[in-house]
Length: 124
Image (cartoon, rainbow, N blue to C red; front, side):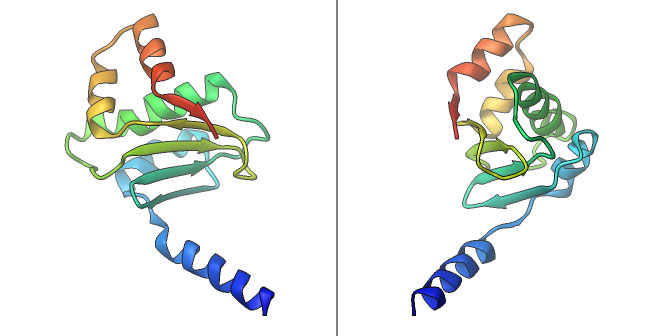
């Protein structure tokens, strides 16, 4: 009985995740993510890395995720947070922001953009 309940729980969780908008997945091709999904306002990116470093996180978030919005204004909405995780989906960072925050990030330069990201980031 426990196995059936666990299987149902996994099935219902997987069913709510949908592929992310094409404009985002195309922009992330340089990092060759294993999976990019959007579920309940959370954009989740599973990288092909054993460990997500600060540099990987900043590049994927800034150039990849937010970059897709800067080049395609209004191309995605409903994203409330962005998870950038390792290949096992267990380690990484969560950016607690969405479209409005990405637009604001795009207007910042140098150290200000790094500080902006860190203010809205937590460990996963």
